[in-house]
Amino acid sequence: MIPLLSTILSLSNFAPIIQKWIQSTSNDHDLDHITSMIIGIAQKITKSKTHDDMLKELQESKILASKFQDKMTKMDEKIQKIILNDRKDARCRDMSLIQAGKINKRADFMVVCAAIGLLICLVTIGFFSHKISGEAIGIISTIAGLFGSCLKDAYGFEFGSSRGSKEKDNVLYRKSLF
Image (cartoon, rainbow, N blue to C red):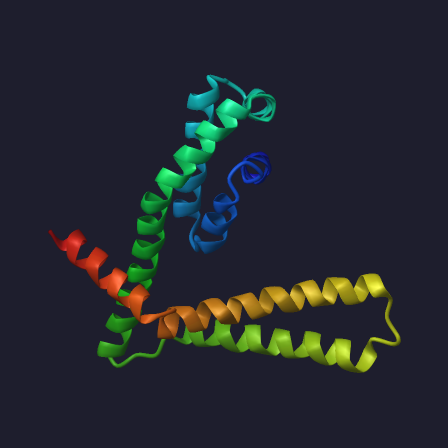
């Protein structure tokens, strides 16, 4: 997985939207599907067999890099459907648990852990910043950002990001039924 991740990160230099897709994907199956689609498109455009050759071709040819960017832009709709389906499945699972009278303890535990982790990072920076090095503060700040991102995703999942997002979820859900 590490060589694929390295390749995907290198490809994101040509199409930054790739990073958003990777960060928005919550399960390994969808992540594998998305990364294989991206790499497949890049290999098809460059007609390269290896990842190194593919990256080299994209770096050397502005035309190929532009074609890759165009394909990634067109692929955005497919990726968004994969991400929405992933979230829809998780929401359906949560709704099923609630209807059965059960509590999603796993999700609650995750949110509590992220909140405690964020709080510990902020307290550490607030009270002990004069005793620790700048590098350690940078690392702790990065970790705090990750915990904050986890909380942002949990709130976005629970409450939805916007009315437009909910409407889009409903439209895609209805399309998937037919």
